[in-house]
Amino acid sequence: MNYNKIRKMDISDGPGVRVSIFMQGCQFHCKNCFNPETWDFNKGKEFTEHTINRVLELAEKEYIQGLSILGGEPMHPKNEENTLKLAKAFKEKYPKKDIWMWSGFLYEDIKDKEIFKYIDVLIDGQYKDELHDFRLKYRGSSNQRVIDIKKSIKNKKTCLLDLKEDLCLEK
Image (tube, rainbow, N blue to C red; front, side, top):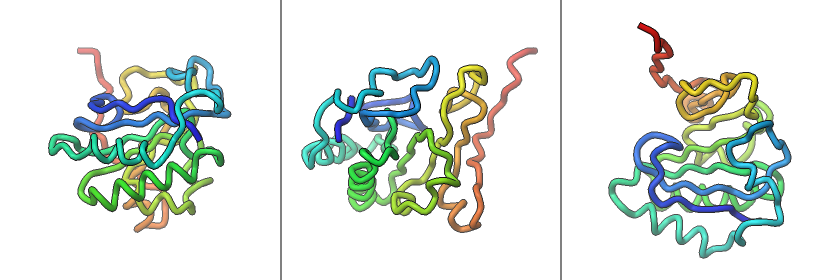
């Protein structure tokens, strides 16, 4: 598995200041994807134990609120195992910091995966250009959901995170 890049101080992919990693490879190829350079599974840099250690080192700073895992597609079968290793290592070292993950797969189709022991928030669903809305927080199109994973597991149903969004931009 490869990854595309690591951002050591990301303020757009989740709340607060975060470390973000973009996994390499995606089968969805959404029209007008914001990150098409992550589609090819053969590009990027090799994901190794050093990669995990680098992410953990970058997250040490007190002002880092959490880790964001994006893509590409973190839950593609080629990426899933190392995505899990990273999430598990992060939560073991930083149990009070959160992990947000973006996936084109729907939560209902992947909810039984082990990774959800470690993920706090999942933004699910493929980006749909015809549903693009720049006013949405943390997602590009209105079909995508921001899911509170801990609450969803506890309640045995999909529970959305309350973002307290105000979509009224007109006076």
